[in-house]
Length: 379
Image (cartoon, rainbow, N blue to C red):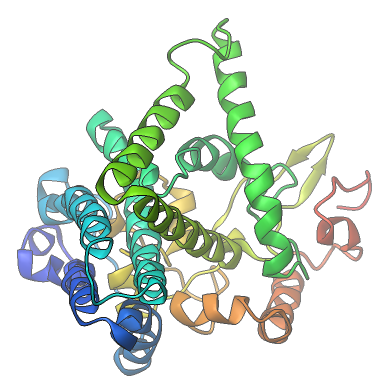
């Protein structure tokens, strides 16, 4: 176990800062042009997949009771990313729309890479920040999400996904046999509606209308509008188009991860609309070392659902006996998710094994496959 005094050493925290290396990489891509504009997605997907294969697994846990003061370097990481991403995104919009050596196609490739950066790193860091109690950290999460026009993710994630994961009320729990290309348009449609409905219901419980200024959607819309206007001011219509491109790629990256995290894993229905509590076996996990460095332990997903406000260095690893494990880290699994036949070949046998292991008493899985409320007497 990693003790609290070890965590406070910046050298222990340093591997988690490797995401900052992607910033000079994408600026290098912009200055070189040509095929170099694809360097960021190549590094993020393929290099980290290769590094996972070499570095292996990390199953070591930190002391979950380590005090906040021991986590300075870990807390600083996502907060510092916010201004770095802001300057990188809007600096590249200004640069790319004036760089004579970049063709329209090269700019598209470059901002595809920017979207990989703002999705893989930026949205993930916003996820870490939104779960904290500090108002400042939650504001930083909102700023990151506004840069990809997905601000409602905070409301959907905190008010819908966490309480309802593995049930029909959670749009982002991927259904068994549901390919990503069906999942993706469904969640884009349903998540915005469910997030708004959750905030409206939260205000109604306080006796307030949805139009009350405390509704965070007004903040979401204002921040997103400011980001759009800034992109337009810096790069004109071309700059606005590049901004929208990176935002679309970032959201696609997020939803690929959402698809992987809970695919086919459902909570047992107890009758009368009630479900069992969330347990470690309701999330897929991966202990791959380098992708967990890049993703600040997002792949230790079971513990995140057990302790949602636990900071990322303290998330605990679960063994195969405690929670289902992915065969590879997210860089490989998200690529596999784009190929439905390959995904089903790899994951469906694992889902069936999971069902036999945890719910041998359930013989009719058809209602769960469709994520409909099971009829009484069906588990």
